[in-house]
Image 1 (cartoon, one colour):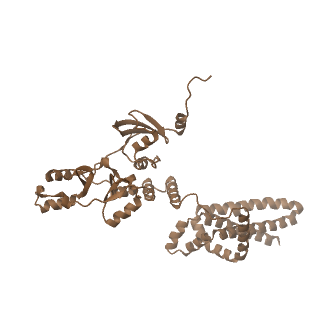
Image 2 (cartoon, rainbow, N blue to C red):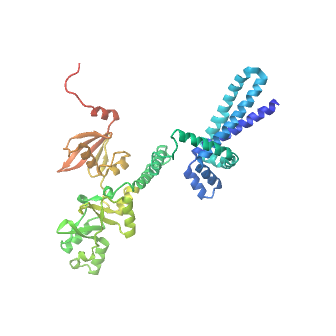
Image 3 (cartoon, rainbow, N blue to C red):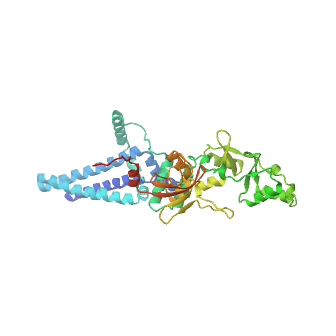
Length: 434
């Protein structure tokens, strides 16, 4: 009789271990992995997904099965030890069963499951579905009682995530990179893709101060020379004043016109071959601008502000660079913009976008209030700093190296310890303390 009792105790511990492993595996299983496996034809992945959709009932079945097995094993072991040792057998049974339950029914199975949650979830999916079917009526009663208690304490309601799905995906990518399973380049590409909806055209455009434009009233020979001297294939044309853009000249159209004129550039009228300009608002989301480029089958647009004044230009390449990083071809003029120094500091051109600097140096400078590094310094300083002035904010020291009129053209940026920044931020009192 004792051997039968011990056998039942062992079976109960095995059942308890199964439920413990199932709980860890199913709650830790990746829904994305299950969806991928399901599309590949794995039926067990479909079962796991169905179980996760019924999370409340699943948790109820796991806890109910686990507790029934543990209580049954403990009660039977107590009766056996009481028969052997009398009343003191209760203490013996408590000590022995606590050790057995903790080691073999909790820690060991959960450790196995947590090391391979997806594989374990696939293995226990069908038995758990059968368990939920058998315990179905009892689980419904438990659910009703739990919901009544939650409503009584004002805790009823749908689950509300702290982060949006996009932020959760971004966090998952950052975690994989931190664990060494994701390269920095891949992380930056996915991060750039997720940022498209948050960025506006003004964040990625080329400012008008850096635009290459040509006066359409120039003699044809001189105009052709300027077009051939530049590295760009699409060039805005202006007339009377730079703000009055009348068209966009494509280098390929110009070459066709030169061929049609048998090489006589004096016979070329650029106004007849220039494409009409396409103006887009600076506050348009980058994701919408990307769709607009695809619809219009063009790669070039001029950006205007709310008053209709030209602020810059944006190209398809500018948007793609937000995803894949800098794109250079054999005709690009490489401008460093970011130069690391031996002392750990970085010399940065003021026109360098904050996002590009963050991507290059793996920093996290804020880009909500300013687009360029110079704009960030001006925003934080609330003035246009003079050459030689230094500021410390966001964990970095910014020193102005060059200033041309009202533009900051070069800065030195040095990371500083957090304690140093806090110390500098403390107000200093005049006088001497005793």
